[in-house]
Length: 115
Image (cartoon, rainbow, N blue to C red):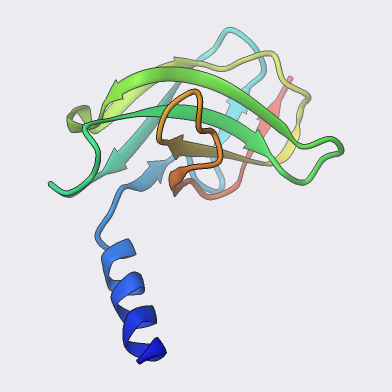
């Protein structure tokens, strides 16, 4: 029974928001550059979400909200790259809202931010 539940969970998650950009080897420029975040969705996905820049591979881990109440039907949005520590292994998370940053709907591949 557990394996059926696990398969159903996987099947449902396979048809949800998916971040298509940024991805590896994308490079964002540190501070004030306009960058694109794009995604795909299905009809069962929430209508809106928040975009968060994260890096879990630094101490302490970083989270910075880039955009709130993003209309999921748009498919992409331009964001201003924040002044972040230059480095690798950054990701963009699509999350439920600005109050629930750990409620991740989708996550990009890792990318780099340079000065």
